[in-house]
Length: 226
Image (cartoon, rainbow, N blue to C red):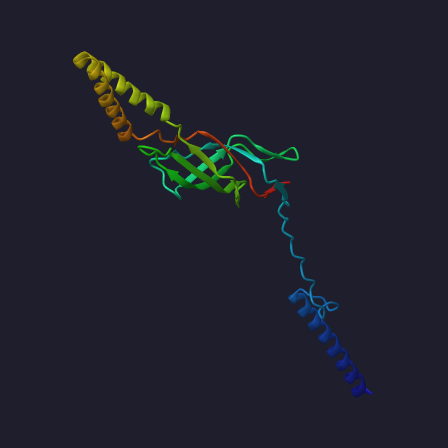
């Protein structure tokens, strides 16, 4: 009987010691016996705030663009493909909303240059805008060409010839009578014609701040806030 009692006590002691060991291990690892076999729940990721959605508005073809030149242009100095810049001097509205504010920048190039001729041919210059920048974005655009032509000088040329002929006639009349007046007029007229042939006509010159205008020849879709 004694040996059976001792055997039972040993079994009971071993069982209690194993449970204590498991409890100590659970305490050291921060787990409990009831949950030690289950994985920990993963933390949910934080969602980044979505950027505010923009709206797209369409500026129709035919819209007028009133501009202030930012580049100096001249028919006797500018070259084809030379850059041209301008800014809006009047805002563009769509559905009661200012889509293109004053100061919106446009860029383009010189498309044609004609210097004034000595005998005929009036000076001219033309340019066109191809990009527009607003709200930190740049958009390709299509616009009507802008052209300027110098004033005609035919009246002034005729006056120069007439003045020369008149002066020659006066001098010829004083020196040689009627016949001298005729010869003097011819000589004076020739001198006036020579002055015209040696002088070029007026040139076209547009300085920074010059007012120009064009129109969109194709719709322009612009993204706006809100």
